Image (cartoon, rainbow, N blue to C red; front, side, top):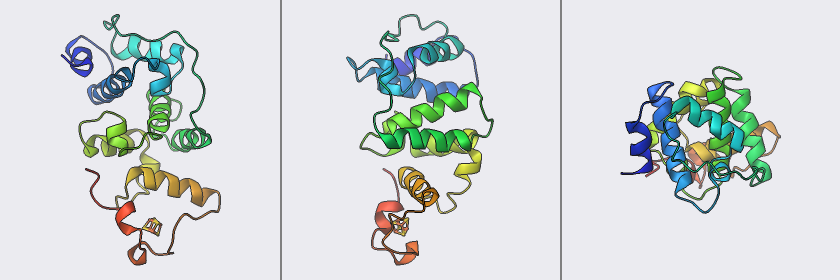
Length: 182
Ligand code: SF4
């Protein structure tokens, strides 16, 4: 049985979709052992323990790791975390803070973001972003690849441009920014 299945099979709290998302992220983070789980998912040990106590109270078998969080993996991680928190659908909710940290930490991985988060499909990522970071997700009107969209948004906020063209339709990088994330 996978870690995701074990987490979902037990009794738990919280919204069922959020529970599924957290189970996915914890599952892919745990697969990176011996990297401590808090480092892998971007939460402090205390925050991770609180998340598990809320959503998976029977998961006393899950190795939460005792090490302090080593801090952001890169300067961009903190910027992305802030961008998400600033656009939370329910500002300061635990779920939004936890997900902002997780998305920012896992976005440094090399695959599509939904894969980096251990989700089953891209649709789950779009759903969680619209649910928890609605004001930001609503700005991705053309369904740009999510990592590209985040970094383009952060660059725009800084007055920078990573784009080769002012118009996406005329850009030679169009295929890197749009299209299926499979
Ligand atoms: S397609 Fe080109 S112009 Fe559009 S976001 Fe990507 S890099 Fe920028």
